[in-house]
Structure formats: structure tokens, C-alpha cells
Image 1 (cartoon, rainbow, N blue to C red):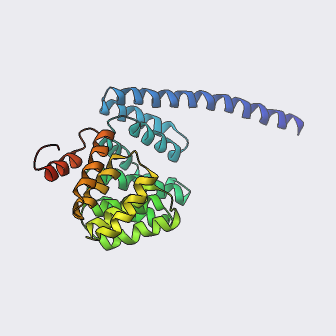
Image 2: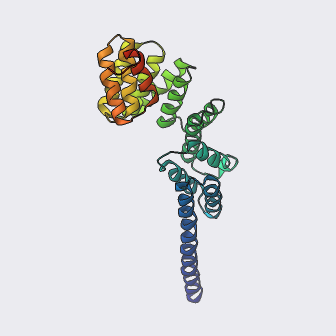
Image 3: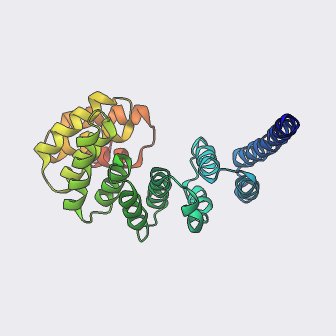
Length: 254
């Protein structure tokens, strides 16, 4: 029995060493993929990321790492990230923890929306919420997508209110709430929510733009212009902010 114990121990030690070597090789593939991303060689990056995922013993962790690699790029190549991640949807059941699978589907929904795939994002968000009814991030992103598309606004309102009921201190959630109310034409309510959002996350251009849009609808032109300037200071060239400022100033900056 003692000899068997030492044999097992030695086997485990050797297996551990081998796994460390494999892990280093996997990380090497991941880093090479990141370098391809930085060079905007998206096909090359996808090939290396595929090798990395297929060699990884944990699909959930591997896909999370690839997702982070895409999102850390300054230009945020969401379409390429979506096309890479969605190919693993047939293997989603390999993610044994339901919350992990919900997170995967939430990411697919968000990337699909950001990629302009309005015909598919709802399916992914619905899967995420079926697996994890308390996934407030999926609720927020789903509600925002619906608001941007001007569809199912009452559903969007229910979703974002559920998200805020679960986690009330996220500025982006109050922004989504305000933006849904704006799309519904409920401007005074929208103003209250967007003020909370800006107080919570004052350095976000989209939030400043949304607040400006509400001020404009309420006839508070000067307040709107102040918020637009703040939005443009945070993100020069913000298309929607520039368009609204042009509309409020009659074509020229004032």
C-alpha cells in the first residue's frame, strides 16, 4: 500500500508538471492572439484563439479570456468578438454552472446588439435570463438594446426596473432607465433618472448626451448645451452629441 501511495504521488507530481507546461503553451497562444488583435489581423487572432480554446481544459475560462482580449482593444472589435464567441454556442452545455452559461449568453446578446444584429440579440438575452433570472446585467443590456431599437419599450421598462431592484447603485442602469423613459416620452421621469446616472458616473459621454437630449425635449436649451459640451469633452466627435448640438444651435456652435 505504501508503494502504491508513492507511485500515485509521483504520478500526480509529473501530471502537475505536465499541466504547467500545457498551461504555458495555452497562455502563449492567447498572447499571440492578442498581438494579432493589436495589429488588427482579426483572422490570425481568431485562429490562435481557436487553438487556445481547444487546448484549454475549461471552456468557460477560455472564452472569458478571449472576450476580455477583444474588449481590451481600443477600437473594441465587437463584430469580430461576436463571430468568434458564437461559434461555441453548440458547446454551451459544457459550461456546467448555469450562471456561467447565462453570462455567456448575456455576452452574446450584448455583442450581437453592438454589432447591429437586431434579429438575434433578443434570443441570447432570453436564454441568459432563462438560465439566471437574476442576471441584472442581461436585463440592463437587453432593455437598452430594445430602447435603441424603439421596440417593446414597456418590456424594456420592466427589465430595467427589475435590474435596478437587484442592484440600485449602478449609474449605467439608471441611464438605461432614463433612456427607456425618454423613448416613451416620459421626459420628467427620464430627467430624474438621468440626473442620478450622471451623479453616479459623471465621466461617461453617453450619459451626458442622454441628459442633454432630455433637457432639449423639455425646452431647457442652455442646460442641454452645457451637457453636450461635457459629452464632447469626454468623447470628441460623439456623433449623436454633435448632431443634437447642431440642431440646437441652428447649424453652428454657440
